[in-house]
Image (cartoon, rainbow over all chains, first blue to last red):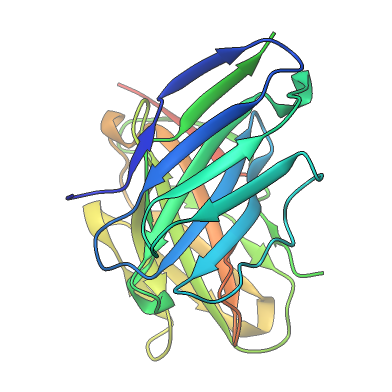
Length: 114
Length: 113
């Protein structure tokens, strides 16, 4: 596609439920990032995928968070047993693998845990 | 730990006023620097970037930023803002050898017509 696509755009879930957020990066982009944007907190790095290499999971806040990237393309971020503090906008970005070209962001998934 | 500081969290200006948004990073080595903008209801978009060479970088929509290594700063400027510049602005840096950019907390700019 022309841009990074994220779905759903909005998700309301009950505390304790699991959620899956999807990211479809730009075709050919080898690098994929997940960030979390909370009100007034800026962008918090969660996880980074580069090609077929093992992901950098250093930003995941707890073991309730996990992510995978299938076939070097689509990525899914899973949050298990959601808590109210997980409420945020989850952003996905991709890049050709060289930082010089910058990062293209999707529109995000707004997650609300009630 | 490396970090980025954006000193102004909220800025309110009238149209035609000049703009300068501060950005400081904490890392002593080689860095790459970015400014991103997020217009209301839209996704983050790249405004400009610095990798090497001329420390004065020009971006889209009349924005520019100057990399001052001695001050660890990369402030964003625009001589005359427009109502359409109302948005959230994020500074980001990438230390040499890293692949994960660090973003600041953002500055909310409101421009009154």
